[in-house]
Amino acid sequence: MTGKPKNRVTIIGGGPAGLACLRIFEQSPYKWNLTLFEAREKLGGIWYRGEDVRPGKRLPTSPVYDSMTTNLPHCVMAFHEFPFPPSTHLYPTVETVHKYLYQYADCFGLHKFIHLDQRVDDARWNGVEWELKVAGRLRTHRCDFLMIANGHYSKPYIPQIPGMKQWSSGRSVMHSTWYREPSPWYGKRVLVIGAGSSGQDITQELGTVAAEVYHAIRGATRDDSVTPRKRGEVVGFHSHGEGAVVYADGTVDYGIECVVLATGFHLDFPMMRQMKCGLPPPHKGFPPHLYNSRLHVYPLARQIFPLHTEIPPSALAFIGLPCRVVPFPLFEAQAAAALQVFAHPEKFDVEKETALVLERRRLIEEEVGADECAVAKRWHRLPKDEQWEYRRELFEFAGITKWKVESWVIEAHNKKEFIREQWRELLRNGEAELYVRGINTEEGWRELLYKLLHRPRIQSPCDEFKSKYALPYYFGHPYLTQIIHFQADFDYVLNGGRSDATSKGLELLGKDII
Image 1 (cartoon, helix red, strand yellow):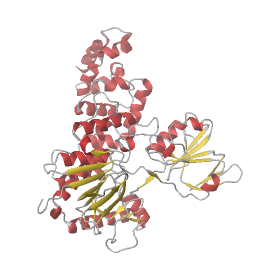
Image 2 (cartoon, one colour):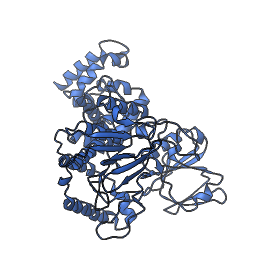
Image 3 (cartoon, helix red, strand yellow):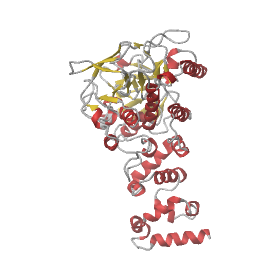
Image 4 (cartoon, rainbow, N blue to C red):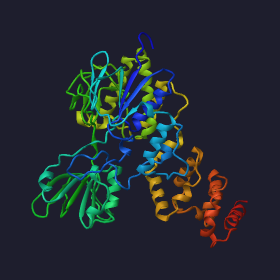
């Protein structure tokens, strides 16, 4: 860095994104003056549940529910060079992830930078530096660089469906942010709106107690032959009589008593009062201000840095805006890109970044049309292979060569629903512990994923010794070694407790192949 050193970096948010920023900057060769403000009493962001509140009261501090787990295998979503502990369930619980985040902070010595119970009420760029007003502090906190990492699961999105407010009189409409467990819906007829991970989980859980469960998904076809019953987009409610729910295909359901809105969340940055709220107005090129449409932040270079606004790109970074991605390693990649721009602002090529943003807009408009709301909904979504290319571009931009996007990670992510269902089957069969026991390397986890991906018909490891077709297929594969390690666990299951069962199975396998 040239001239008078600028090294004061402030991070807002103590969840995974904020912790990733601290790690990247702390490990940098530059001497940064780091501060992280977290509004709550503990680290963890969404992964710290905190105090629950009743629906209709103030918002809960986290939307997690009792049975919530990750929706990605932990070996896919872990931070770089920091795996989850050995033998961790493939889809860990909220409590396990929260503990992992504390271990991450411990490992990289991050606690000394963190200030808990410190809510930033206002962050303002004065043209030279940032001025922050922090609740409970009389003095203004000043810094050169600001990183916004406050997450996007705090402000529920409530769709404005015609008639829903009137319909809810005498009936229940609740956003999933208040959902914790299914017992309040015992014996009810419940409609869940929303196709995301939480919508799918909640729908399945309600099916264990509710009289009927309907799952409304935009673009779906009405289907009463499956459980839960599938429905398309909800376009209206009528409150008369039994009450009616109207769908986009013109069909109607009567007698539904409760609605759970698993409809996601708005982006919310209450401390950033210099940002304009709402969709950017029609403009040629770029709007003159930074906008939060609640659906996207615009205009940003690389989904991180403000572009052509009163705030220079080398002073502000948004971390964690992209959605439908593998989050933790992406946070580190974004933080590394921010470090590069903060340390070398002269290397930020405004003309090149402008061209990239305009090209992204052109491609999105080709896909969804020029409607500003449709563009906003699509802007931070990185579907299919887009997230991998984005992460690679960030690594290249930041000059990082030691981290790469591995092909097995891409395959596991592309087939995440199938792998998750396989894991649920193992949990139902009581075999999950046996599958993960002793795995403590990336290779071991990779082999487990491969096993789940390519063995759709086999329900347990002991089936390896029951099927002549399965055994030759996996002979010589590295995780046959893992199965041999399970010998003591499976002897009883395989052959009534006889200690030679596994060795006999392997002996037969050798004969089949030879």
